[in-house]
Image 1 (cartoon, rainbow, N blue to C red):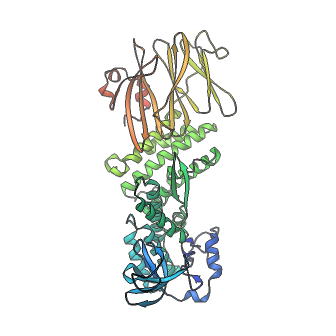
Image 2 (image 1 turned 30 degrees about the horizontal axis):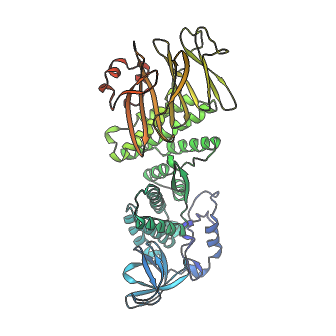
Length: 518
């Protein structure tokens, strides 16, 4: 017997005691294991379920399942689009049905459901509707129901990657809609929750976890994984790779070792998905995602002493490969996201300064507690054994970024505590005492941002910095002149040329490495 794709989508709906939507047979690697629900459906299959039938799929929201075929009859349950019902008869303008998910019988108006045949000859009709619903926002639950009906009806030998691609796109879009809801519309929230329950009844798994104070929902990607194991088009594989590598769907509670494995796997998947025959828009999206993922890999490798410079170079190449002329407005935010991620680990490609006697100020690093790096500030009279100041961090200290002020009274160095967050440490003298201040990219919890040293203003105690961070879902970029003694803001602009100090005193190394001038 050929290997089997055990389709979780079909496992939950039961008609007359047998699975309505059986798992579909197709050639996939024998290592593919059935889900428990799908395995149970296979085990319970009887010759009776081979007889094609007709089901009723609810096409509207908040449909009343009534005790009798009258509008005034008692309501048994509330149905939502995508619910599949067993047809048991018809009276007047009503269809007599049984809802196996809720274990309720009753009547629904015929205009609120669509009869769908499960006969192989009628499978193309279900596929046509699925193609129509695939890109319809708000109709994901209904689309999943038609995907399940099509996969039940089509002969196993005719199953292609298309229904799995459509199913994955709809499930992924529903999860993104549920994560992004910010309105106070209780009706909309109720509708989204109901649609999530409907697709869950088909075996579509939506994972959830807390991220930055809100609940993040993500499709587990089972349908996309099947696309990658089947004969599929370049576009279908690209859609699958993009869906399976979303940054926000990596569990933030994951251990660093597990995170590195996931990032390496994401990078490999994206590399395989790139193809010359893809539309330029899809190529751009793959390059943008690849840049962000490789930036994370660079951070992971650096913490383990690996080839972080190679990974950062891969990220830079991917970002530089984005065709801005074909960059859609919908991808502008993703491009900014990737640029900040790459910028955070940008110093990995720059050589570390050579060790030697310090004529002014310099830093040396040494290991502290397990996982810590200690930074010692030294000069010609104070070595690492008796530093001017010493601080330790669990973040990555980019020694190549260290820059000393012309007066020798301050030093700035980039420190990266997270793969997507880079701060600026400023050692400076205040009232004849050395202090250390850490400048963050933005206010609030660390999420995505970079603050960069951009130059010193000679003859004055001023520091130039550039910031870019995501705040409330929007990217903000600013160029600032700070007072060195207090690090308070003196002037700010959205463009560097708008500030005289920036126009005259930009640091050449900053101009060489920064991505904020893109």
